[in-house]
Each structure stands twice: as structure tokens, then as C-alpha cells.
Image 1 (cartoon, rainbow, N blue to C red):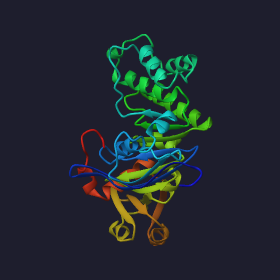
Image 2 (cartoon, rainbow, N blue to C red):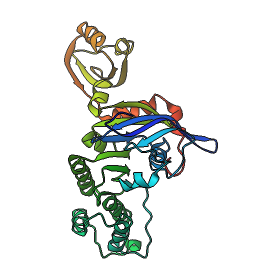
Image 3 (cartoon, rainbow, N blue to C red):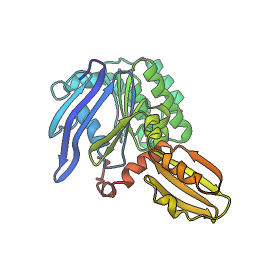
Image 4 (tube, rainbow, N blue to C red):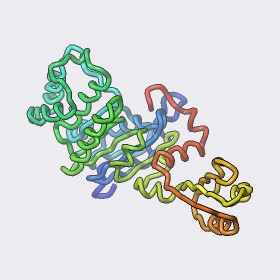
Length: 311
């Protein structure tokens, strides 16, 4: 583990009966970065986070959180961490205010009540309402506030914008940016690709319990697929383009236009088009969502591994 790493896992494995949720997860997250952890339900995101906090024990591998082994000293790890679980469970007899006082008491009242109130106001969270009367979105806001309110040096957030409307999603993302600006490290799981692309410094993609890629969002986009639209002066046989390495014909709009997907170098495509009656040629980079989906479409078996509860 490097001196700058906030999180490290090496060879992390975990099974639930015959189901292998983690198959040797290797991760290193640097201090002060926002790291987006991407994968569909059942890919291993939540299991990884729970292992980081010693909420469950892995079958094998090494874990370090802020330089601490969470299996040896889980209290020290949790004292320095703000954790938002995928589904926060709070006693229905509390009001929002009572629940937040409860969480603050657990942390020896490290959070100033004025700061807690400011976070609640920002998320339009009514402190006087009973927990039992809250919608899913408002319960999510309670979870966000309790994770952020003591300004921890590490945030572990499992789907932080789940159930929130677009305006509140932006408020949460801005709060995450501000936490980073104040020196925090943020590790958050998500399947909302647009928000990861918006705020993450680096992205890890997990598939079937294995981390298959770690890179910056822009690097993933730049080195992956492009999309192109070619307009011809007269009808052409698009099959000649489909035979080129890395080129896939997505569909023909009419007899004189074609949409293409290109993986890798475009040199051979450009040379092939030079011999055709091209009238117009447009290309566009994919979104992170398209990159992410490509990883799963290339491996159909991964679509059938989900477990209830989003392991």
C-alpha cells in the first residue's frame, strides 16, 4: 500500500454459499480522490464496501483502510469514515432530528448541530418529521446527512443519489465535491454513469466480482468506441466497411447513409472511405455509459449473476 493510498484491497474474495460474489478484487484508491465504483446489481459493489468496513468478513485477501486493517481495528476505521449503506435502516420512532442526534451521539457529538441543520436545509429535509412518514427519497437524505455531517476523512457511499430527484442529486454531488475540496477521500458505488462521469477522478468497473478496468473517465472514453455517421453521394454496399477490423455497422438510415461503431484505430476506415463517394463524415465520442455497457455486452454471462440485495 502506497503512502498516499486511502483504500487498498488485494485478492479480495467472498462467497455466499455457492455464489462467488468477489473473485479476487484488487483496488487502490488514493487519498483526496473521488473514486467511482461501477457495476450493475450483483456485480460485487456492496460486498466490497462491506468488507472495507468489516461489516462482513471476506474469505481471503488483504484490506487496508486509511492504513488500518479493518478486521483488526474496525472501530478505528469506522470512526474516521462516513458510511452510507445502500438502504439505511433507522428506528421509525425517531423524528429526523432525533435520528441525526442519535448518529451524532454515536460519534461523540463531533458534528456541530448548526452544520447538521445546514445540510438538512440544503437537502430540503424536514427535521421534525417522523422517520416512519418519510418517502424513500427523504430517507435517503437522512442517510446522506449522517454520512457527511461529521466531515470524515473518508466517505464510503453506496448509491448515494438513489431515490432522489434530479435537483437533489445535484445537491448531493456538489456536497461530495466540497468534501473532496476539504481533503476527504470519496469512494462511491453507482450504476448512474452520468454522475460518475461528472465528478469522479477515476473509475473502477467491476464485473462478476472482478475489477476489469480502472482509469479516468476520459481515458476510458478516449480509448474505447467511437460512433460515426457517413453520408454518401450515391448508394454503396456497407458490407465492405463491416469487414474492416474493429468496425461494426449499426444500421442504415437510407440508401446513402450508414452508422458505424469503431473500436481502436480509425486509419483503415479512413482509407476505405477514401475510395468511396463520401459526401459527409461525422464522428462522436461515446459517453461513459456506452463504454460501461460495452464491457457487459461483450460478456453476456455477466447478465445472469445478480443476487437479491445488490451484492
